[in-house]
Length: 115
Image (cartoon, rainbow, N blue to C red):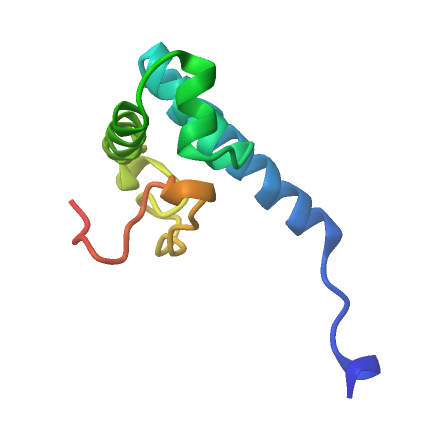
């Protein structure tokens, strides 16, 4: 019965979105300029590889390679799970949420053991 379901807490949703935005901006800061441009054009603005290559005056293969490197670098730059929400005394970390293109929104990855 839809009218009996709990009303979503807007404050929680806003806080989660802000956390995701902050994590995305933090991940962008760890990328070289070309990878950052490719990641934004492809994953945020949803440009095709050909459109991105034309805009950046490069090849489609170079765009795809830069995007793969950007995703890998963003994963390496994620925060240490012991210092985030799931840190000592704060209970278990919530599962990682992915942003467009696979960028992690939180430091915890369920497929890797905690340090």
